[in-house]
Amino acid sequence: MAIHRNTSGTLTQAQLTHPENLRELRQGLLGLPRRISSKFFYDDRGSDLFCQITELEEYYLTACEFEILHQNASRIGKIVAGSRGNTAVSILEAGPGDGRKTQIITRSFANLFDSVSYGAIDISPEALDVALQRVSQDMDIQTHSVIGDTLHSLPDLVSTATGSRLFLFLGSNIGNYASDGAARLLSVIREALFPGDFVLIGFDLEKEQEILIPAYSDSKGVTREFNLNLLKRLNRELGADFDVNEFEHEARYNVEAGAMQSFLVSQKRQKVNIEAMGLDLVFEQAEEIHTENSHKFTLDGIESMASRAGFVPIEHFFDTRNYFTTSLWKIPDAAPV
Ligand SMILES: C[S@@+](CC[C@H](N)C(=O)[O-])C[C@H]1O[C@@H](n2cnc3c(N)ncnc32)[C@H](O)[C@@H]1O
Image (tube, rainbow, N blue to C red; front, side, top):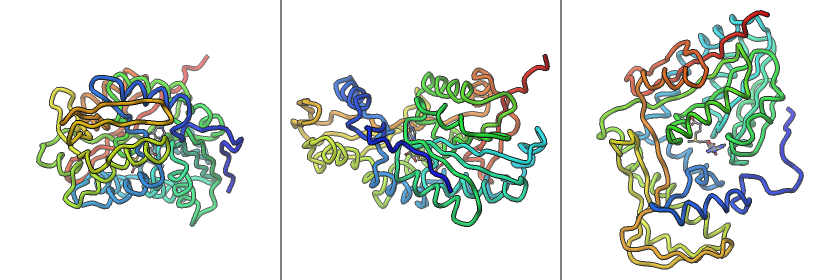
């Protein structure tokens, strides 16, 4: 197994102290409303808490996509294989988390291709370690990884891939981006890939708030802990002094945005210092920090997103409850010259 990563000892985008992260955090915390990007959730503790969330009864998204992949991985592999008649495939992925979904694909593709390789990009080094170990634990597969933000570092990942390419962006991670951000990310993916390549992308579908709200505010309090861990992370890594007991997690559906949104709500008027940023903040009682968007999608919306970004939707795969779709898109083959 070959693992190529940033070993130069320089700051990576996984670290909050990276200048770009400090800039983004400052801008968000001084904005109105205040914001912290959801990409900062995933330190070791955050990645671990997210794994716990995926096991919750209320968090239906993971169970739905597992079902979809178990039912359809082989069919997806045949479409990718049939397209060019290649015997080698490169599976690439942004944000694999713990890699359990990836493993369904890699195992299934091993029966269809002579050679399967896997490359992943993630902002969390811990997630990358777990995912790469998982996919290589029971098969001979060449792997490589890039630590970083998908938006900035994706070309580094794609440059190493050969054969047919399938790019995975699962778990409705796309829903964390606002519509202009999602369009930008899709165009980065489109630019990094080549004609004839495929993209498999997960979308959580619009549904009743009675199902949505518990998924982001579960009865065991794991999503609450996940959200509050952001403040603990700022305390640990940036010398901030957030009193975590004086903030509360809240998840609401924003009808206009078509998104579940998570907030950290200040329980009283309080001052916070973030030492590494030289920043003093005053939070009023009930003032919020917006920490996550999880957009919900319609099939029409998904298809127009695909075509606006230069992809052709090939097939949508659904779970039995029709809560979620994992959608296979293709970059049109280049016209013969
Ligand atoms: C919600 S988890 C989803 C994991 C997995 N794809 C799934 O479907 O269960 C998000 C993953 O994306 C990573 N991530 C979040 N924002 C990122 C970004 N901007 N660039 C790269 N990785 C990111 C996190 O570290 C985590 O591994």
